[in-house]
Image (cartoon, rainbow, N blue to C red; front, side, top):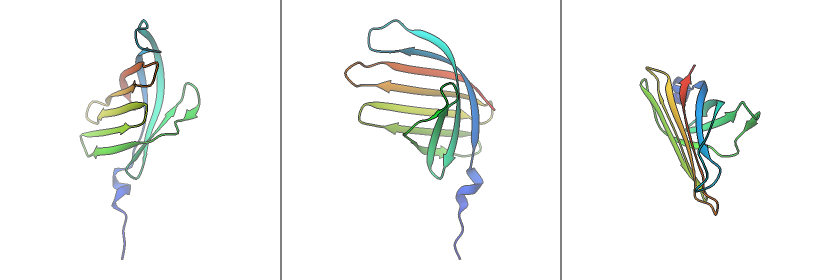
Length: 113
């Protein structure tokens, strides 16, 4: 008999963030608001940007998903992305650090439900 224990830790959070970003290295920091859905498919974290109505083509690997936290990250050819959520307070952080020819970074901090 086979069973899938992954269903016990399924999640789907909508997070409203204050977003701080640079389009490319050396640019002025810009600020805005953004809303994301973060959910899992097995051990992959999927990211849906509600502001521009798009599911990102990349997934993050989930390293921890327990009663206290979700920690996920992805290292790609031209960027590193991270997501952390405190399940007790529902505060989360999402980062996107580019190391392509232009650079740039995004730091988003806020609350989820």
